[in-house]
Image (cartoon, rainbow, N blue to C red; front, side, top):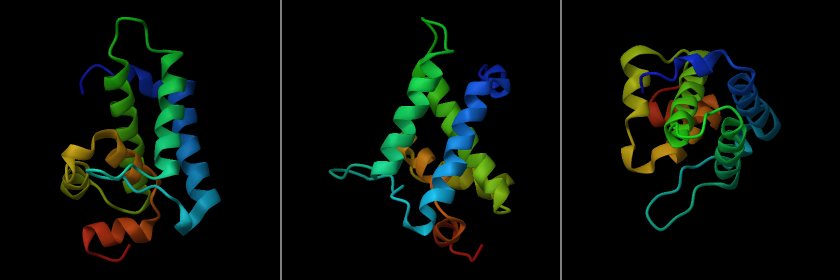
Length: 127
């Protein structure tokens, strides 16, 4: 997703990243961040986080620009930041981001919000 890097320096993206951190701190291991799947909606916190991200980004993404693309890019950034916090990077992080392509933004939000223990389960390791 080339071309969205300038958004990373905005207060709004920092706010979205901070909201992900606050949600993890508030809900801990009880967070309802699952990404859903065919015939199954994503968790409530996952959906709320994506709705908040879209609303915040709508305030800074110029009309005519791809809001959905920016939202996806920011959710991917949030997931990558989360991975960095628990020591997952490089190929492992890229593989995890791309593990469930059919789930789109719900998968990225899930990865940004889940506790480290759940990331460990997804990776098949203890974090």
